[in-house]
Image (cartoon, rainbow, N blue to C red; front, side):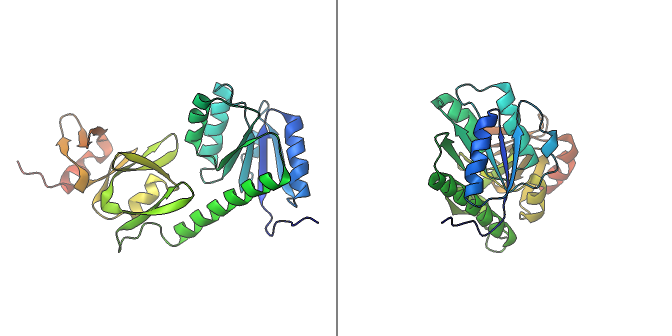
Length: 249
C-alpha cells in the first residue's frame, strides 16, 4: 500500500537521458506524485519558462563539466532561485562535484533508484524549502534583536548582524560574508536593502557592506577594504555612501 504525499507538488524532470526520465516519472507516480513534467535538455528549456515548479530533478553527466550542463544549472538557478534541486548521475569525479555543488542542490543521488531513497530525498528537499519560507515569513532579519539565521548544512545558525562584513551577489546567488566564510542565502540584495539596519549600505550593484566592518576607504580608487578584500564603489552609489560615512579631513 502506497503512502501518497499529502500535498500535490509540481516536479520538473530534466536531463538528456529520456529513458531514465521516464523511469523516474514511473517511480514518482508510484509514490503518488501526479504533477510531473519531463523536459529533455538537448532540445529547449523555453517550454518550461512559465511553469510553476516546487522541485527540480536533474540528470546530469558529472564525468565532465560541459558548457551545456553549466548553462542548464545557471538557467534553473536564475529562473527558480529558491526551488530545491536533486541531481542524479551514474558516476562523477570529485573535481566535477566541487563545480556542480556551487549551485547548492539539496542532494546528489545515484541513478540506481529505489522508491524509499527517492522519497526521502524529495521529503528532505521540500521540508528544507518549507523551513526557508517559514523563516522568511517571520522576517529572517530581525532588526530589533540584530540577529539573522544563516543555513549551515541542514540547520540554521544564529549570527549577529554586526558580525556580517558584507553581502554580495554572484551568478544570481546572494551570499553573506562572515569572518572569512561565505554563506548562500535565499534573499536578493534589493530585499536586503529594505530589511537590513541603517549601518548596512549598498555601495555597488553587487555589494552591500557593513560600515562598522570597513577598515579603509579609498575615494580615488573607488573602493573600500574589509579585512583583506577590496570592494568596488559603484558610481551610482558613491555620493550617497560618502555622505553616510564619517570622514574627518
